[in-house]
Length: 409
Image (cartoon, rainbow, N blue to C red):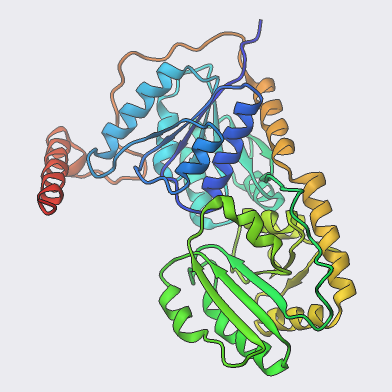
């Protein structure tokens, strides 16, 4: 008889953002379905700790300040051997894929691709010999993997993110009129390279020159936060700009429900989970017209896609929707319907569980009692990877921890 599918998830870290929220939603859905699923992180930070606890997801955190990578790899394999999962998922960073080198035959090895980014594909190409399945969150990612010589012969699955929807939150406010300020929101990391948040002051200037009333809420933190706070200051009674910083995940749904437009001017994405969360609450996306992820979700009926090279297009789309509130209302309903029908947490969980059921072996694999951790594949040969070099690095970790603790005395 086929054994019950179970999952061990490895991640290099749990940063505040879509990849971590996905892990929480997936593991929480497994718990609801009474399926075994544990998460192992190579770093100690867990900003969504409360949300993991609320969904009863168990997370093992390893401290990068106390343990060298090789020791964290060994500890993770040891913990996996106790769990005995039928499948192991490497979710984020090369270190999580390193674990797959030590997963025994008979356990399904899965790689996750969150972003349509050359660096991510490079990792997949390196670790392709240790993979059985690759999951991409967008059709473009899947198409790219099917064309790479190293990955095209593997089983490649398209499984987009799923989000929880609070149907009790309203998506239409009967007290608002066509003259009411349009409510714009951005939730995410305040980064320039991917998110292009330095376009926000330019977009603000276009909105200001148009004369439309608006409020703009920015939730999140990052290296560009100080710059944006300095550049984006309200100048008229008809405009309001709010910086909320990082907010608890439990407040995201309610915050989206209080807004009309979700703005995302990214240069590249996989499938923005915040986009699905916004649309699930009836917020209309004005987003970059990117091949990966966004075109899978945003259509002419539920949002506006803007050519990333036409930076003035983001403001023009917002101005257009302000002037056509009937179109905005129809888009709000269409956005919510799209997510409800195709991108719910339940739909995502059903796809993952179905994939694991198909790939689960007939009998439990035998995990090794002891393993010898080799040099990580992406590390060049050097003294630091020798036995003596590892001892030196362990000693340095100990001394650094002692130094940090002494500074608080």
